[in-house]
Length: 615
Image 1 (tube, one colour):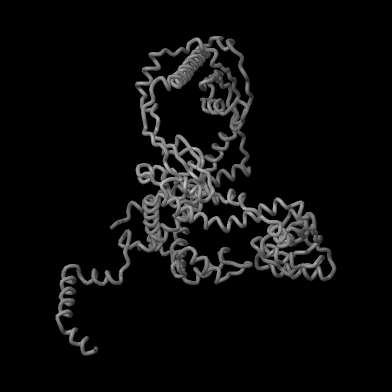
Image 2 (tube, rainbow, N blue to C red):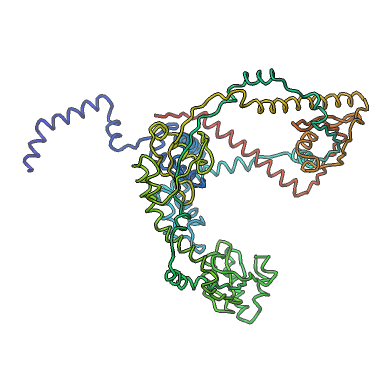
């Protein structure tokens, strides 16, 4: 065999391979050949640095998972994958620009710096201490390797340093903040004259000619959209559970199994909470020494505990069962004997000393009292075991069937009907975008097939088919005449009310006493957030210019049912104390806002200057 290899290495095959390599090198160069074997595909190049396709796909996957997690019923078919890929690529390009800028400014982290950051991250800690197993598992769940995560931390941290530096450097003049606060705390005194729609009803009439003209000019608004009537069957865990019979023997066995859970236990605890820090152990040791010397736990809680609410009651937290406290706290509490004090327990809140004050247990209720509850629980547990199996069987059956009658009969389900479903949806379950999209797909709409089995809720699945399809059509005038008349009446009423309000304002501004034509309502020194005069009136009252020369400023609001004339009498600026907490908070908020705007401009500047190439 070795001899054959030697002969072939000098034969025709070897000469052909060498010839191909020579031609490839002469045309594309050595970099192309080597890159084809060792390089990594890129999705973009920023100032000569590549963004690897692998990183791009990982971030796309993470973003897709994030969007799915925000859905009430996660459905991958609802994701706009093209938009996700575009947004992710844009963000990676922007990130690369910022990383390069940070590098040019000499901002870098050493390996020791990264280690320090990671070990301080709470998501990698167990009982307040860094846990390597949790760290590795969390990183892997993110779809990253440890080295890759460390590099991501290295990049993001220096970018955040620049961001924080720009945002924190923003300055807002005290005068600007004070002026804005004066405007915010401003009050206004005004009067309001309400004009009801009945006051102009004699000026509102609609002719058949106007209705015809409106219909002809707005025909597109009077089209009935494309619609389908659909048949569907629903498989739900709840309905499945209702059809499961539970024997008395099963019920009794389940009752005995649940006895321990049904007899609830609550424990009354007191605690002393100490803030995490370099002196925490020293403080805890001092408290333990004083407890051992016979001092009261309650007195020490009042003296030391940073949980000020419970400290007033000597650290008393009251009664609680399992599942209430932090896992570490709960584990320690339920391991104590009555009157015993725990060793120090570390949680995200700090370091606790826990004392068990009392144990309260309830008896197991008689079977007769909770029989129905246990039957439902047991039936649902059994249904849960069968649901996935039946769902798979139903999906296969509906896929192969020419209608829904067969699958419905096979699984004891009811065929229901929904009418008037548009591409925008319809009544439940056709308020689910994925199901509607399936219903209007070519195979279902034109081919006469059933939809796939779609999960529309928690353990609720639906399969549907089209019974009748109606194309979009123009609605005749006779069907929409009343709707048009109502719309025109509203429009003319608003116009007439606006004219009446404008006429009253004109007379008031001319010094006429027309204001006696109605009853005015006065509002004295109302703040901006008052609800006394209604949102529309308040918005208009605070939009009017300051009255000049003791003359009121006038404005109006108009709706389809009424109009209001507003006479602004005075504007009272809010008072601002130089050392007020409100002013300080506003100053900080404005500075933060200004800093964010400056950072956004800085990002855009770097992005515009960058050379970006996309394959």
